[in-house]
Length: 253
Image 1 (cartoon, one colour):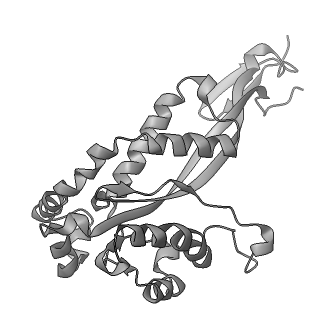
Image 2 (spheres, helix red, strand yellow):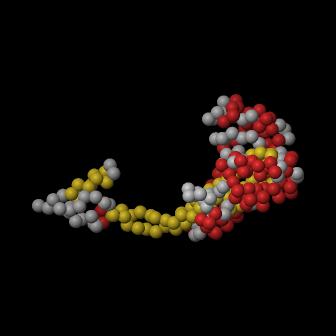
Image 3 (cartoon, rainbow, N blue to C red):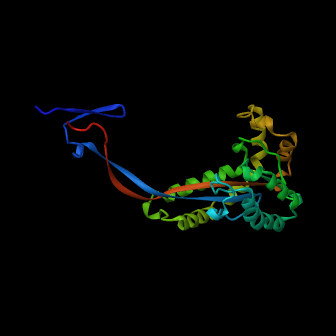
């Protein structure tokens, strides 16, 4: 009588005969796909918004130290985002001194290099605490962008196949967002902040806000003085390939 081999697959034991590991019952189908991703920057103010800007990936020649992962650093953020996109937008609307920018807490935003650059170019940044995405309007826009792209990509024929197509799809969708509706979110910011304060805030981020920041947001004329900007990482499986993975473990005897 042939021996039986007990194979433990995670928490599910399976009994098979020796040399039967290639039988169909022991082969599982899995999907392995190539990924493409892109980082984007955008800013919105009351009645206007920037284009969706793809962040160029740094090359190995731009590595600054051995552990440099070639992500967005302060120098690149200032020279490739603030200088060509934010500063012209500020000057197109009014003088930079009349507007305050609400940024996230990424290192490229808060570093000494970035602070000095903003000071030199009169870019005023509103004091903003860490862990407070619920009070930054750009987070709602990122969510709207993601949901819109997800609906488009339900149809596999609409899937981007490379980074260039991903960028085009994201920028086209960004331009088609309901901006007229989004601009009215500025009118709701005072209520949003006061509601968060009344509820005690979440993770205490409201208590970290300076009184200056709170008063700037809840003032009646604040909607025309604030700009919300942020960075967003978009990743997509661009192709899938069916591959048979064989369960491993328990050789025959």
